[in-house]
Image (cartoon, rainbow, N blue to C red; front, side):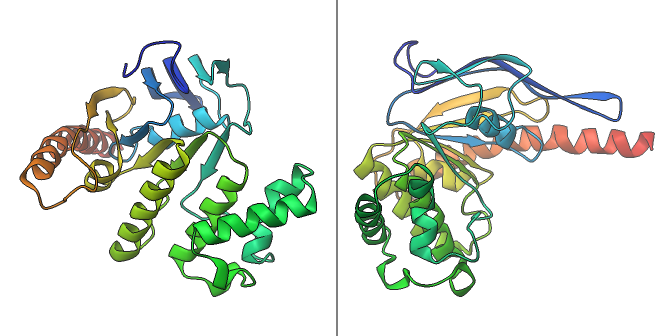
Length: 269
């Protein structure tokens, strides 16, 4: 789905994920088929419990699927790898390190020469507008600045694929929009392939080439919508809001299923 086989950066075929807890099995993902081309920006959108983050973690290699296959750059995923960089909602920065030390950490682990590390860190400090904050610690930064550092640390490894798990979910609306624009700028400049999890319809339409709507548990692909609106996108335009209405209806169907499931569970209790 999306692009022809053989030209994908990310190829997800027949993926299933079952969790076993307390003697019970819970199907989180079922029969996921998704192809993502080099340089595509794809958002996974859906209600809580639809398996968005579960699928992203499977692509990252943190939690392998119980069925199906995931290939990255033509090779099967068996563990995390340097071809994928992950940006989390919680920033995941080392609090005892400065901004520049956090960005340099992965390069140091790889054994890069000190001069090369300094050059790369300087480039990223400039690219993410962090130069004035290079000696600060995470506790001295706003949430938006911390997320810039987290993005810079991933970019330092120069992975062709970026995985982003609701990276702006904890930020205020203005900071969120600023960082959305920053990510779009970086994506267009660096030509990364991005798989981005969000629960925001507007965010997915503002950012993505494609929005993949997932169903409530078990998560499957309900709709794979290609977004052809020109960038920069006008969130007030009639075309944007028509797509927003369409996706809202799809999500409300799944939210209703979610609510009914919870009601049945409460009745059983």
